[in-house]
Image (cartoon, rainbow, N blue to C red; front, top):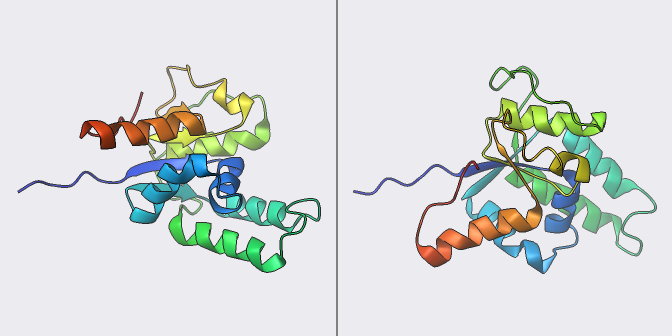
Length: 162
């Protein structure tokens, strides 16, 4: 009897979520399918959902898109993401500081949720990818998709942590 591997766990930054659930970028299809199938689990905290809602509500965002489309995108992501509440998760050891304080919370959540990957489009976050003290891999969206595609072609397991 073969036991299934637990789902890969990730934290997705706001821009990655927008590409997946709002713009439906074809380049993100592999990641979207993995999330929908439960092979990948995205962790989120309330503040991140609030930020996403704020971005979606912005008058300058999604010109020409209806309010309902914005609400649907937020609901679709909220339905797939797992919420980690304040005080839950693993204790966080000292993490390197991100140059952008607003992005530090993505690092902290990734550590608290003990994720495999933090997937980001933010250059300041991505600049930290080679830091040895990170307990998770920091990947671009393209790198995450490539890692998800590789085992499907090779029949192997997903590379969890770099």
